[in-house]
Structure formats: C-alpha cells, structure tokens
Image (cartoon, rainbow, N blue to C red; front, side, top):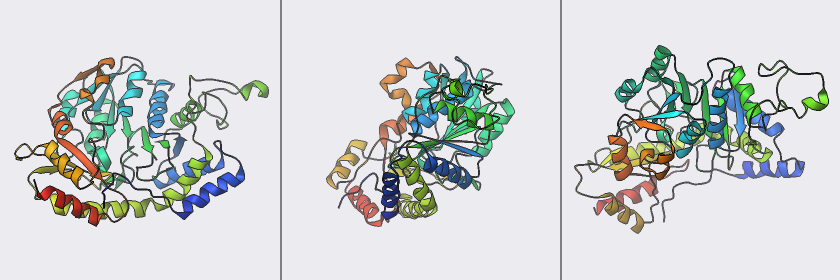
Length: 386
C-alpha cells in the first residue's frame, strides 16, 4: 500500500451535479454559483460570500477591496503584519498592491503566530494583521482580535487551509473584516478549483463582486454603495468602475460546491478521527514535534518536525518514508523568507528562528476524510527503524 497526500471526496452526487450542468449547456457563472455563495455564507454565519476561481484569487480581490473602500482605505507603503509560514499567495497580493510586509515568527508547536512576537511587531505604521491558521489549526483569535481593536487595525483572515476549524466555538474564517477560503482539490471541500471571500461588510461585498468580474457594474444590487447608476442602460451594461480582474468561477464549480458543503461536517469529523489516532501514536515520540491543537483543528494534514534532541536527520526520515511509499511535503510553503522570491518583496523581519527550524527540519504527511488507520500504522512502522 501507499500513503498519499490527498484523496478525492467526489462521489455519485458530484458526478450527477456535473452532468446536470452539462445538460443545461450553461457553464459560465450563474445560478449554481449564486446559490452556493448563499449556502456557504449561511453555513459560516456570515452575511456575504463571493466565489472566485481559486483561493489565491480570493486573496487577490480581498486585498483589492481594502484599497477601494470609501473610508480608511489601504494605500501603497502601508505596513501589514504576516506570519513567516504560509502559502505564497498569502503574500503576493499584498506585495502586488504595494504594501510593506513585516514578517513575524511562529510558535514551533502550533505553527501559528508567536503571540508575544506579534505584540512586539505592531508599530505606529501597522495598518493590518493577516492571520493564517496553519494546516487547520486555529490562531489565538481572542488575543489577535483584541490587538486589532486596541490598535485600530484591519484583520484579514486567510483561512484557505482551515475550513471547518473552530476557536472557542467560532469558525475560523469569520473573525476578519475580510476572510478567504479555498476549495482546491486537496482541501476540506473541493470544487476542483475555487475560492471564496466572506464578509459581513456590504461595501466589501459589492467591491468584491465587481473586482472578480472585470470591474463591471453588472451584478451590483440596486442601491450598491460603490457607484451611482446612470440612465443610459446601453452604457450601464458595460460600465467599468474598478481596475478589476476576470476571476469568475464556472457553474460546474458552483454545482460541486452545493454538494460538497452538505458533506463538510462529516468530512471534518473523519479528519478529526484520523488526527486523534495520529496524535495517540506520536504524542510520546520525543524525536518529533507534532502540531499542538488550539481550539478545534480541521486537520488539513499531520506535521512532524525533527526535534533538536533527536539522533536522526530529516533526510533519514525521508529515506524511510520513500521506502514505504509514504508521500510528504514541505509545511505549507515553509518559511517564506527562505524562498528566492523574497528579494522582490518590500519587507522586514522581526525574528524567524522557529520558522527557519520548521522549514529545514519539518514536513507533513496527508490527512483525508477517509479512515487512515492503516496508513498511519504504516507511518509508525516506517519510522521504527530510525
């Protein structure tokens, strides 16, 4: 047997949903997308959701909305705090809109912000904090939201890895002014490719809808606060008000989302069962640091960091995993400061010791909403020889 990084969650329901779209012969963004947006917002207890073609695009247009607000808009040169460990597209839109990124170290056990370092990083120039609940594990949102309120900062919650996680009873991806999700193949629910921006702010919602769709006025509600409608309907149908994008999803993605969102509680439940088994097997193995759960993780994957006291190297671990056909990869995107692309980005660093250690000594193995008992046993067996 082999232990893969991800497994499909599609069944007959998804096939039937796609067949229905094919039979309708309507593939561009339409009723299925709109219905999925509403159900997604309702599931997470938010007012609005805007679907796009990827989680990366969700981050892009979410950042863009903050530059086009009527009041308190971000501007190029503003300082934004980010964690050292996340996926690349947490950082790229911030850079592309001219923000200065201040990187803050992580807690080696949770892999999320070191809260003490975060507090020290806030300056008079800081305008926003970006939270990333790494691989399903919630950030300490009570402390972070309090910091944002104290310093009058925007909270942007990139929740693309952590759908279904909860902190003190609240879903991650609901605490920010803007919140983003991904529905990529390997994530908690899948629409093949896809993402969503979620908010309670009506202006942000209207901006996001325009930005995903060429910057048009089309698709705006009557009374939208982001423009004033004129009398010429011929012109209004193709009126551009924002420097937008074309990051629309298709009806296939919307239809898949409608089937997958119904499954989400069950999918998360199985991931948590797998996690309980994984933790039981490795909690006393002093060779590895495993991710310490805060709140209720949705367990995207299982991270393992070779401890400083261990008498083994990561390369020895990889050799054992290869021998047993166990797939592995870097923790999220690793410490972003150690990637070549950082030379292009306006940034500063407060401290990155833990992020560097995780980058150079850590990895993750897969989790999925199927019973992985045998796969985790294979992992245990593979690592016994070290």
